[in-house]
Length: 440
Image (tube, rainbow, N blue to C red; front, side, top):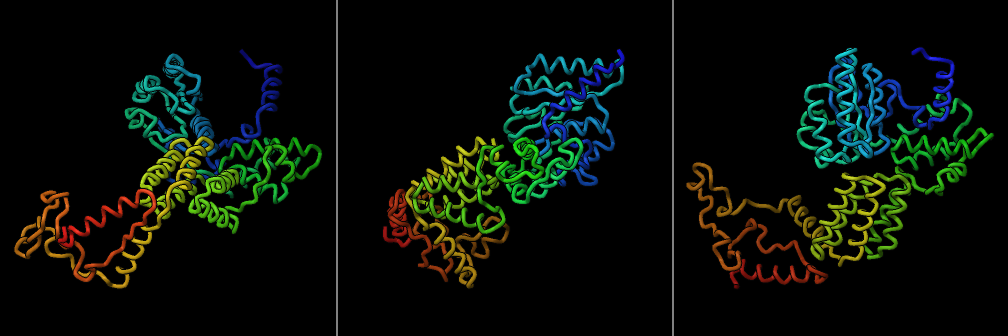
């Protein structure tokens, strides 16, 4: 059936209703923002596209980094028929119907199909297994997009048959380029508006590395600005319903806020710590950076006074990688509250720093002969291992013998406090030291 004027008018009307983020979707790999590690000359993805080879890919990365964009660009460049399924609403029946149709299209017309599954981590094991024959026999070229770690959320047979590509959050300059293109391109605002410098900075902060979010806020701010050509910070605040957070991720405010955040946890003020956490999240700080600081603080300022603090902090960091923001804000907040309320001790950092200072000053000495490796040929003749006492053969699992080099005998690094669980560890340490000295 031939197209009519009504079809053209309908398509034009539909394009006019599309969100700015959809209209500005790149048409070629060269238009894709960021992801230089995936799109450079000779990269696996570019070679797959340029060679028009059958492929199965998993695109793993935070929201707004271009997973759907890359899938649509690949389908255009390779001239494959593009079919998209959402793992939120599609079932096994839908998957099998797409695969059957793809086989018919290939057999009747020679048309190849690219099947894109968004949020593939939401597919059950049964749904993922339904994809296996199509992937293995290359009835479709499969691309699955996920914000969750595929090693946890995707079945091994499907993952092993696919190339895993990790997308990174866009940099501030990447987002600035996306905004600039949207302001000038005819598909976007076509030069009808400009962005004040501070408004552009605010949009970039709000975007948090998410290109789609930056374009959504830009489109809304342009509507708020109306006939005024320049979009201001006030327009963005009204459009996004969020006040501008004064925060420069590369300047003094970045260091001041993270310093106050750490000192609030150290000072056992959970409310202040949560304020600074919220401030960083709202300003678009990388949640992985926040998580790393929490993990460090768990050992630096809590340590053995509450050993579970490190477990909670590491779990929060893993949650950031697994689910990302906004949900991971809850995990970060739990870790912050736990650490703020935990008993405090800096004995661990003081101990390792003192030990490292001695090593740097040349306080070392040879390893005692009885502790040296005695497994290789000739080691026994050199006296290695002679007189070593196996700890498990002695009461309490502690044997009275020298462990430190001669130059460091009697040198103590770890001095436990009486705070929290460390009081008990201190008592245990004193008993152990007595045995090591031959007093018990």
